[in-house]
Image (cartoon, rainbow, N blue to C red):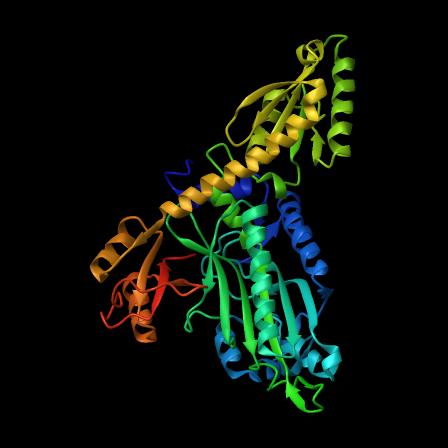
Length: 473
């Protein structure tokens, strides 16, 4: 299946054939296979380090949440109820209260925070969770994109003032941007969600939006200022330096394994997966080429020393020494799995004091002398990372159109998709009408206000915001 012919089917085949994931026996669920999990671990390692460096700590909270906790924040409860899995029995006994299987953790976390926060000295409280959540997305399972259970991280913080909470929201948004753009080579638009599209219960939501080859947007992550919408019902109060009692300000934020889906769709090709070097579990695979001669020992020795040289320098290297497969078979497998760089070592390479490097992104072959192997491997990995981002950035820029009237707006969405930059009056009625008539939503409103260049795209009244609309996953 070719990417250009049927992106959906191509995507499914990449996920399964590259052994990233498999379908579970329950509708709506998937199995994350070791190779797919190793990519998630690379994402997790980078983000976990950034969070800890900025003062956050990891914790864990229960999977089950009492229904009464969800009801404490009415808007939040209303927004999540249609997606919640409920536990009503334990063994043969009926429970006295229904338990929600964690759709998100704001309520149970803030219940604990109400006991942990007493004074301004306890703030800020900065906690992150690595877990899974369950939401009943069982109508159309798409691995990594839409499943009933997914891996993610969710941060939950408490602050003394709105200003402190605002800084937290923007710091996390920047971490997410660095993760998606600098590590995953996936360019994004950042901005605010509209009131209609924001996280239920939030004061405001910031978002990162990427564009896929089929002209649909995908939300890469969100960071929310929850205001005092949770601190008041959960009684998260602190004694300030002014000796007065104040309600705290809280935030939450998260990214999920959906990041992997965007990476697959943006970078991969008809040969298989393409993984950006900075998040690749294997950055370079060494494939020995043996013949039944006495020279096989010299090849094996060179493979060993080359692997040691690369590994000592921090390159994630793997030696494919399996004897039951031919070199050609191995080449195809590692191309399918998207390893950025292949290192071929055969008898002729030994004779010439060289190795052969093959780039996954463009299939370019390079003969590299032994004393230059490390430098060339590092250079190639850096070039691959930059090339993938540059190509994706150009595609993102090309995906953005501008519309000044509604007919043009609809035609652009239908003919080419992508982001449509348009002006909006700020009324939810216009936003809802556009969604109902076109399937497009406001994906983001720029962080810095842009001057409207036309009247509202729908009602033609005076516009107050420049927005980016798109259809989405």
